[in-house]
Length: 219
Image (tube, rainbow, N blue to C red; front, side, top):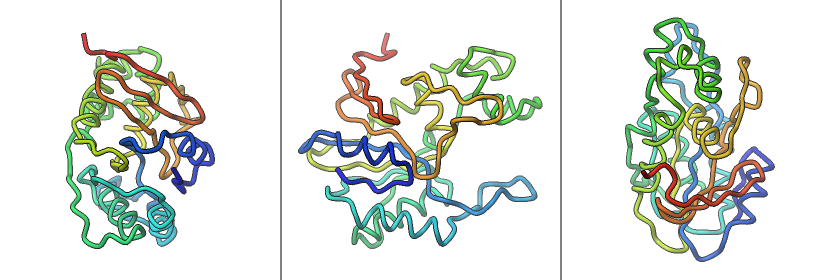
């Protein structure tokens, strides 16, 4: 598959995906405007460059897009819309799903004074005082379950557009990603994880690594 994301490793992963099967991509939105002075990220939209990159991803895809899902946050819906537009799909039907916008424990942790990167560091290293007591598995499971609740059609790509923190949590749970207290090794714009298979038997691709999971955290 050709998936013209910013990340070179993601482009390489796409080329390794099996043909004629259903693929799901769980990705961060495209490039947005800088952090707001008032701290309210909810209304930040894509920059012109971010729109161009999303259009390019859609235009260069060599498989049909089956379904569009997104966090309800505007920049995620906008990214999915612009990818669709690049693929020649006007007015796509985008299902907005809360688990693609919500992270267990993040709100209480930030309210208690824990920093953004500190929260993820705590999840990755099992430091409950950084995470409001939430474990990495508890944060990742709702997202994984939601990904595999998306219906599958063979030979199509299902696109799920979410946020950097979500991709980081899934990559941490499945691939032992470590990001550091300053956000080192963080998820880039349009970067994400490819999946194929079913909830009880799936394969995932992230930054050049491929892993197979059987009954992951289903007990």
